[in-house]
Length: 122
Image (cartoon, rainbow, N blue to C red):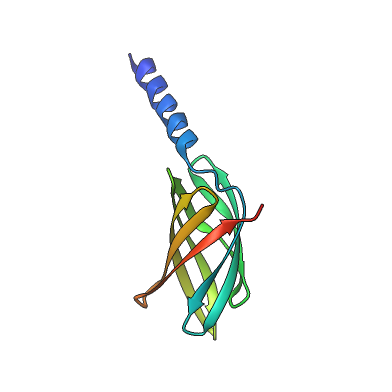
């Protein structure tokens, strides 16, 4: 009986991973900030429900994706950036719809947030 429960748990894990959105590849978009428009490129690598990769911005440079998760069509991850001598964490929440991801980005500890959409380019 324990073997059957273990087998069912493993099958459920694989089924859940199969339902995760396919985000592998390069995505690009622009966001309006108080300091002007910023373009950001994401290179995502998904492995089951784990999300890794990197992102590059014309305003904030390159950052590694940390604590990335995919849950169905939802993405969650954090990046660390340096802006005007201040180290910041940006917390991303996104929803995948085809070749678009709609993001809400919160700047840790500031109460500030921005929303924007990125499109898959490769």
